[in-house]
Image (cartoon, rainbow over all chains, first blue to last red; front, side):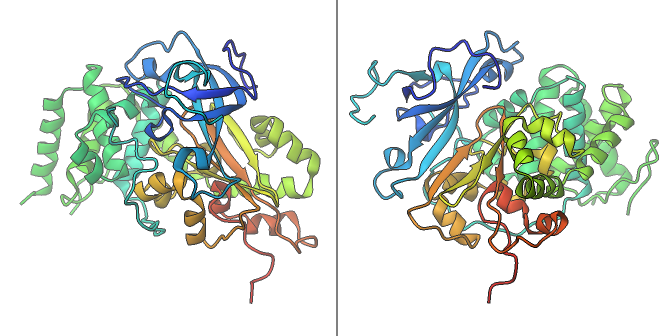
Length: 107
Length: 103
Length: 208
């Protein structure tokens, strides 16, 4: 862990990336929205770029996670089965897979 | 859902990776240095610059090269913060062109 | 033709592109208004010149010969850089990704072109290209093949999209048959592209 982390997810937790149409400066790539992965690392709390980008103070800090996904879950079955995609995602873009979102059976 | 023109991960139609490398021109080195100097002085943040590039018109975003996009975003942010005005930049460019004998 | 201005600098020719002219205008105005100084600019130019993949190669070569240094590099990368006289203070956060026989890492920034500049210097043009930003996440093996790296499906390919303040450096796998090489000789095998992860380091001897 790089910084103190106040977020709710811990290493190993399954998470789904939110699929919302939020405006502004977003650092959660389009291709990962709605996908389900797991927390690989908890990086800790960082200033929020969505606020900093508009001259804001970046507060409150948001917990940043290294979230891992099976490539096959992101792009479909043509990917090599062991391959992974890892994205640095902020807490406010994640939810437990069981909560809302798409009806997605993958874990 | 809206997708920014910068948000290109996984977009179809990408071709082979051009591995050639161009040597930086003086103006590109200057863009780099001015950008970093403004950052060190706390005048702008990288997040603001990224946002400025995301807000550019999409055609310019695709057609400009890397440092041209940087310069456009430096200008946008400096004007937004009231540090420079567009008309004074235009005037300065016109002075250069006059000095250099622009055809 | 070029013309010296009141700062004593040679201005480039008038064939500069629209944006190129504007950065010189912006530079002059910022200097006139005292927003930044000549020294600020010169410092940044020198800082950037001092940064190159040779820094990363030093870290990698040391890691290959010294397992305790490698452990320190992975646990506390900025401190390990300082040990080697590499100034990594400008990096906010820095993570080292260790390649093994079973795992290869590849780094991209799909949203812009984030790169560990304080360690490796400026990113190559290809890293900033749309084709790389688009394909690295869904076709990393295709990209690696273009750089000469072909991996079996037994090897796990892990692509990192550096979307936040974390900067990633790949610690490539030491090539086989390099036991007799010195640290300096090993550093020569560590290419910039192997620290981004699109290829493995150079082999110890040219392949037939």
